[in-house]
Amino acid sequence: MDIWRKDEIYTLRDIYALPDGERAELIDGTIYYMAPPSKTHQRITGKLYQTIANYIDGKGGGCEIYAAPFAVFLNKDDMNYVEPDISVICDASKLDESGCHGAPDWVIEVVSPSSKPRDYMTKLFKYRTAGVREYWIVDPVKQRVMVYGFEDDMVEQYDFGEEVPVGIYGGFFIRVEG
Image (cartoon, rainbow, N blue to C red; front, side, top):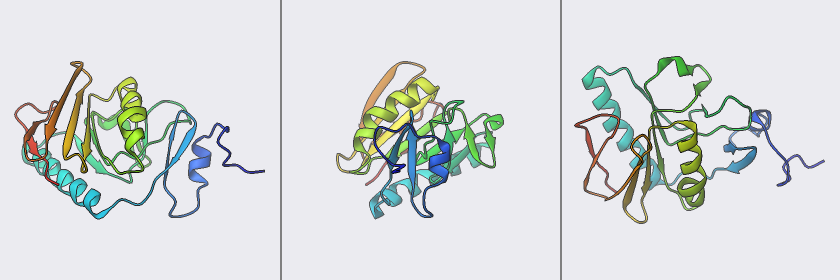
């Protein structure tokens, strides 16, 4: 029996049964395999992580930041598991050693060619309905940052090099570079 047939509904058990080194996300029972990130993807993610972590540390904030691979269990079911490039969680009760149980406050995805439809459509809808407060899609090819403020029903677009305001932190701006 082929356990990876497309018409199957998958669960966390299938994610944890993947061969070592194979990464995938699970959204509404569908497995999405993840290619290794490119050098550009890693550079952008690393700089964003460093900037946000420094800001949180400098303000003595109660939020925590995590970079992929970090498990986020969006729903209270066994059919949703994602690994956002960056997750900021401000409610410590959502965190345990296995990851984040519930929606992070802020999620950033850096688009890769293989993840583009998932980041712009599937995850956008999933993060919004799960309760993520702010979602950034960073697109290195288009050199653009799409910012979705779900609490205010806001969407804005910024070019790389512009200061992007962080909705969950008033007065904090990040300049994304390629």
